[in-house]
Image: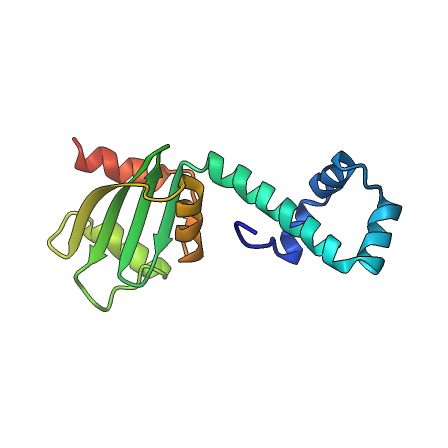
Amino acid sequence: MKYNRLTKEQFEELHPEFINFLASQSIDKAEWDTIKTEKPEVAEQELDVFSDLIWEGVLSRANYLEHFSKNHIFLFQCFDSYIESIILKSLVTETDFLTKEGLQWLSDNMFTETIEIKTGRKEFTEERNASLFGLIQQGAFLSNGQLYQQINSIITS
């Protein structure tokens, strides 16, 4: 398995897609029920293959990721062969970007000496989607890129 297996909740959400996936392999509900009972290892493999297909599709379409921690915000724009980053760091240790108050503090202090802003660019050293998945495993999440674009337009103008 290349990525992680989807959670029970994700499988429930993707139930119609999973049915289509099984149908593409000529597996109907009755046969799936039989596989689950008589060949659980095959059922597990099917769940893993489906999970990888879903992750591959999601990661292939990913353009932006964000990761928030207590004193840092990492914003990423994803390209085919590299990733660009904007890193915001609070120099005030009491700041907590994981709270509403911390984000308000950031908004109020964005361009003061209490916020360090760095930008970067890194070529992918492994396959793009595997690199993005690694960031997700570290706590990043998919984003619409609005925050990245807002901050990037300010720091590049």
